[in-house]
Image (cartoon, rainbow, N blue to C red; front, side, top):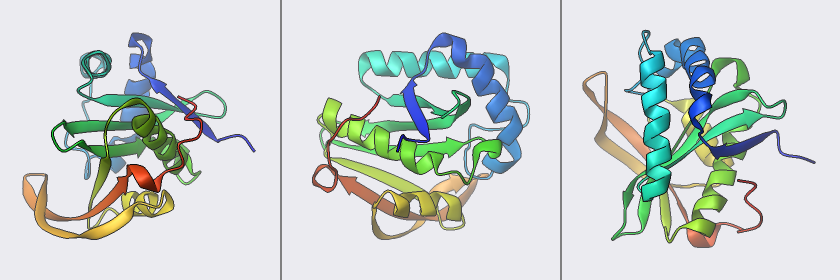
Length: 181
């Protein structure tokens, strides 16, 4: 059975699809993604893609565009906040509203995790999900991330300290078969 999605590094021409996905999904993303707002613009989409391209080149972040089986831009999954000394990084994801509940976030996350452990020296990836973000928590559990606990006031959402759950995936947890990235 083929995967319901693919992931690849962003290219500059992805800006319009990114903008359309963020515009479509802004009301669902705003509570969890501090960068998202109703007026998300072409300039912001272009700047983000340039940031991700530069991040891959400098190995400071590795963000990927997610595409469904029909090749439609469906969201993003990436590794950021890389802490080289600890060989640890943050793992995040989002899927556009019209593509939710089809397993894309889980498959994309698994692909990016395998890519990270195959192509970097990272040992640990962390997923941080607000205690009220049940969709993100479901993805973490579906990819067999280990629940580590509740962190009080760990993230700022809308300027308010918010409790979060921490999940982790370490290199030894993952079968490093083909990453399809």
